[in-house]
Image (cartoon, rainbow, N blue to C red; front, side, top):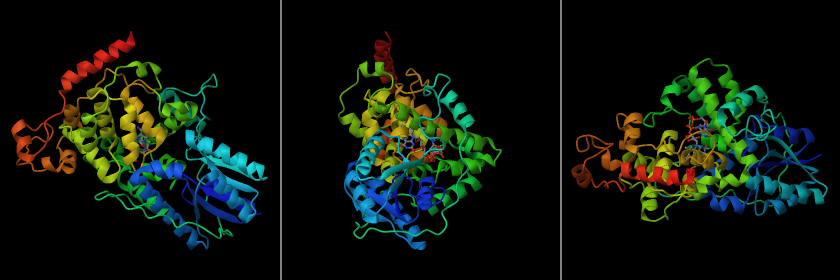
Length: 450
Ligand SMILES: Cc1cc2nc3c(=O)[nH]c(=O)nc-3n(C[C@H](O)[C@H](O)[C@H](O)COP(=O)(O)OP(=O)(O)OC[C@H]3O[C@@H](n4cnc5c(N)ncnc54)[C@H](O)[C@@H]3O)c2cc1C
């Protein structure tokens, strides 16, 4: 019996439980639907990356005698038509627990059921499917540390083997995989399952052992850069977890916990889908915020006059990725120095990030803004200058992304250039006085605590 394998955020052939289920049914139609509701808001980096990843998946299928059928339009109509064309009785997917994906899948399942076809969900983009880790009272966790313990105790399956020989089907009429133009200067990592496996092997060889110390230093290439591969499911987290389990280093243990954060935020978003837009802690909606204006633009363009903030915001636009420490610094600056709502920053991030992921992004923002899970107390306000000095002590990161500050002879102190130096190299004066804005942020916060 033919079936459909509808790929979404699982663009790989290895260790793909939904694909194995499809293969167990018989002939398989590998399908991807370009959904305008997702393609539109994706932003230039994610559109280009997704297209490259689809080309890589198509190439892997062709090596195995198949090809990826790509169609454009509303998935409800497109998936039903595809199933009908090949005479499938089942459409296989990995479960999507995000707010849009879940609603879309319910609509698709209902439309398929009307034609006698079943939507079968097998596995997800996570080692443990969101919603499965529950506390003693059967509720989802709200705080990371107990979640992470229960998540590890829950455990996960070992990676599965790739499918053997498959009889592939294809649709008669398909759309070309798009080839969107990248904005000038934007550089993206190589996409696809093979690229993900290579990057992971490199990190296992020469990154993971030092990860525990190096991961906080944005000037050092000390993190795995796996976020984009995980986002598109070019590799499954349980593959990473299985490799980490063979290592004894502190770095491997820390890395496992970082994957735990990704799973935690997906779990929180599945339990509280409204937090993609609304404050997880509702009292923060009552805080006084400023209207967005020129300061938001300066932040977006990396012209705030605070070197580490500007370096991060320029890195975002150049490579669609920002170091985690710097994501926290720039987010804190937007919320606590400029007094703007986190959603404005989260939206800008989602536009530019190639690894832009609703759960990790919105909850990374909410955490930094103080309104999210866990205790990131609002009163702990990052000082961008001292954060820069501490985590980029030799100024490599700032000099790399802010070319005005690159020359050590002209700019001896890249974290706090004096006024004459700024004038000389054309770097802006700070747009705010951090000490003053810190006081202002705390005063606003005091008002919602009463
Ligand atoms: C404001 C803000 C926005 C963020 N937006 C995103 C986003 O859109 N997409 C995204 O994948 N991550 C996001 N993060 C989390 C983190 O910054 C990135 O996952 C990380 O920088 C990716 O680089 P890496 O793969 O080299 O990370 P590594 O340090 O190598 O970490 C390994 C993996 O662990 C996971 N991870 C690590 N830290 C976190 C974290 N704090 N939260 C969730 N998962 C984590 C990621 O999957 C990452 O690939 C955000 C963090 C903040 C503070």
